[in-house]
Length: 176
Image 1 (tube, rainbow, N blue to C red):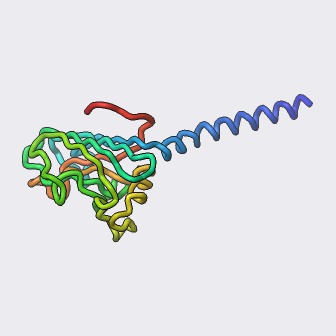
Image 2: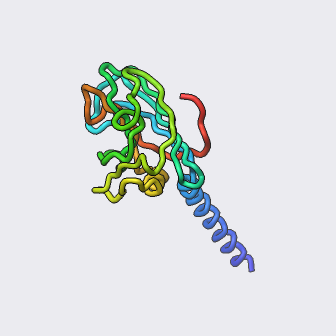
Image 3: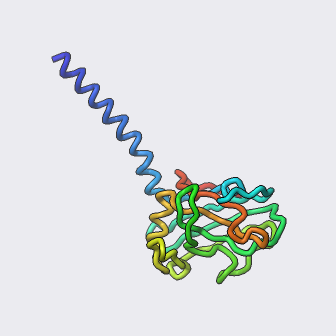
């Protein structure tokens, strides 16, 4: 009887550890809050720049829109546009949507703050990577899996000067 009780405790302990470890992954998958710290060192290729920024996003619980706050500063040349792209860390991918510039209002030139809501009609793709224009649900799923990044493009670095992987966070963060 003692041996069976010990085995039961051992198995229960293993189950507890397994649930605890996977619970973190599940919590990340269900988060509606995301954050990216952007810098030139995270860009591909790496860019030596004093510029930096943050991108915070909150997904509507029904998946109808993405609310965002973008802050950046210290660019030496004018900011042309800011986007969310679809790719894992250490890879480049196509743009999902514009945060500013392009079809959206112009970005603040060297330093600034932009916020807004993005809807299905704001999603531009990338169709070549399996996300069709208007498919906001797939963009949200990609965000929950850590497969999107924020990117700020400038006159000097048209492919992007700062970048940061958008990752789920446990709770809403306020501020820059």
